[in-house]
Amino acid sequence: MDRRRFLRHGLLAGAAPATLALSGCANLIDVLGQACPEDPAESGGIDWTPDVMHPVFFGFKDYTPADGAPATLRVFYPSHQTPFDGSARRILKTCLDRWPTVLFLHGQPPCLDDASYYLRWRRIPEMLARSGYVVVVPKYSAALAGRDSPLVAFGSGVIDWARMTWEHARWVDKRPGAVAIVGHSYGAILGAQVARSRGNVGAYVSLSAAWDELHGVDDVPALLAGINAPSMFMWGDGVFFEDMDAHDLWTNIPNTKHAFEHPGEHFDYLPDGNQCGEPRGACAPVERVSAELTALFLQRHVPLARSNTQIPIDLSPPPIVLTPKQQFYGGPDFTGLDSIKGRAACKGATLRWKDGTATGSRALA
Image (cartoon, rainbow, N blue to C red; front, top):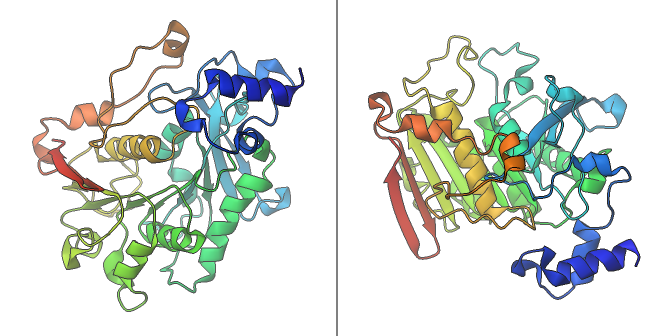
């Protein structure tokens, strides 16, 4: 039996969840199971589909235009290897899993001459890579991006490079919706523009976008409505230019949406010590919580095709039982959500949502 017939048999026999029993199964095989790794060792003995509740290790590699990349950038990816230096780890390759793409866009650095600012964003990319995503973090000159900004084409081009041209593009999920965009500050605004321009992304996450600065440059409510994908927005409740309750921005978004409002500052998503004199909020877990909520949100809306993990609407980590092999990879890490509970400095940290007719909220602290 050739490989294509073997994979088709495996999918139809239940190797994939029922949601994949679609018309056009052959096309799905082209996307998800076109090839197995030439070397079986490249799967590392991983016999499950990685996701936020069943993670693996991560690796990363840096690229420049000399390598054919559209910019200087870093790519994070799932890996089964355990060297100390993540850059030495090989990408995980399995027969039936392909990795969705996440574009991460930073904003302007707190130290304006920080040429390595894009490398400081690790918590979210690492957690997403462990959960089965390929995360691309480009270096670029962040600026306030309106609809006609050339940065929109740049961001979309980075996504296309990862999906089609990157040396490991063979292992990237080619379904149109297997793309998510995460951004901070001006990067979140650019991410919204890219999502609107592409029109078919699977999810969008905004970390403290400076929406107030965009008024007069673009129609902010129209931009938010035009994302046309499940979206999560995070902001500090005392930072006026990112507060989405001002002008009723969050309330009027028509699509599926979550909001994480916290008593913090603009750069709280970075590790402590990276703010270059900018204020930092007293709620220390915000950095970890933002990564954990992002990973849970993407698992809910842009999961790996064969993942059976269901994340509830309130983004609570569901109970699981890990095999001994899965325990070797450390299991899920939700220390931020655990540590924020009961912290006086985090009082007011709230998660809310609207998904169809379902609405609700829960206090995180």
